[in-house]
Amino acid sequence: MSVTNTSGRRKTAVARIYLTEGNGTITVNGKDHKEYFPTLPLQYMVNQAFIVAEVTGQFDVKVNVAGGGVKGQAEAVRLAIAKAIVELEPLRKPSLRAKGIMTRDNRMVERKKPGRAKARKKFQFSKR
Image (tube, rainbow, N blue to C red; front, side, top):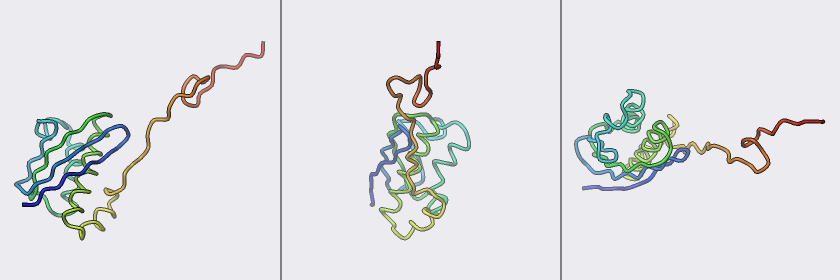
């Protein structure tokens, strides 16, 4: 029985997953993934790595995800699942890479700087 655990990140969301051979159940923070991610695009995003790698229904996934928003969490879960699939079956990597699933999207909110209203916005200038 193959078991692998990996992590995926997106913005400030971090997903830790445990992938085991099974019948395709995905549990996110103790809930079914369809309950945790209520919209169809988010559910598709979570399952996308399985669909592209053509291993739908072969693995059970237990996910612990924290931080960020719902979409960032779904993308973090997708990356973690893709990394776990590649760890078990390295030949699946080119198809996942071609769809852009293996790439970590590292865009984050820029921090606020001192002396500024926001990250880049300046306070209004007054000559007099």
